[in-house]
Length: 461
Image (cartoon, rainbow, N blue to C red):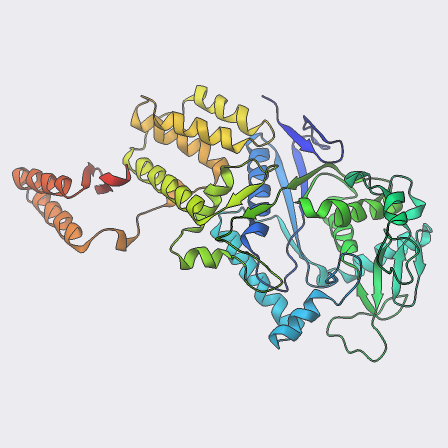
């Protein structure tokens, strides 16, 4: 089945055709690094990784760009409040630059723990100030900006289709506004450049043609995506919370400056919701990180597996019981995989079924169902291993790299295994068979392979 993807712009699932044959440009909104990422944030990056893997499976070379927002994101999407980096600096007592680096490093660590493919380009907002200032200059020359006491703003009234991505009711918003909008002309207008207030010392500020200050949140993505992918590229991704404000504003800026809606496909991952036992609030600091899962002895790959069980455009309800079930399923799959020998051939009929599901707008829950049906089939073990290997290029579970943790094998069992290896070396087959029986009675199966013995916990099969 040809690849089909849901496009938020058209609100339809439609066939994917790249702008340039064989190549795909994909921009994904990255983190604002004023704090740790929580597992809800990380679900979006798992979805984007799966998208990239499916694109690669369809033969495309993917240029994947992810930004790091280390300046410009205010505490309110309505351009109110202080910069999140400055607020984070006050909370921690560290410099804004230091906390940006610390939380960027933590985010990249989480990224790799979830087996996410490394982006082609990581780009920081603070490294691209010249591009952002130049982009604002283009908007000014095109007549889309105005100046207030606190900054330079984009005039959304100059675009009849502003907010189409979110299907915004602009007249209703304007008529029903309940909050003060300061010197902004319209409730949907947004900041391109904010001035440093008089008497305030900011850690992150730059000179510009309009005065000293810092960029608004939205301009960075328009400027950096244009630099690395051009002003019309294939796919722009993010969380569903970006649709109404951030992505609508990115589109407005690029339409005004370059006459495009920036990306041919706009794709959005839906939220992770929590049950009562898994409270999460980033504002209070009481939220679930990947490290929280690790502290409870969950492998981060189990969270990745949990994300596979729900379609990216549906809510995923997180609970510790659901994570436990995902961890159990993943470990069962890992042990089965290790029990199968190498050297088999990929079964093309099963691959075709798997591809049909992932190509239907990344339907990973149904693709997982195909996987488990395959595992329970009567295919030869070597063919099972080869075909599951093929599936894992999309699933990203890294089954081939996994080995049981040393502490998972009791010392007494390890001693028996060593004793049996010695018996085999001495060609004492009777003793080796007797130890095998003892291991089986104690819940462990041992297989003899060209490279040595393989031990499998029977209870995990």
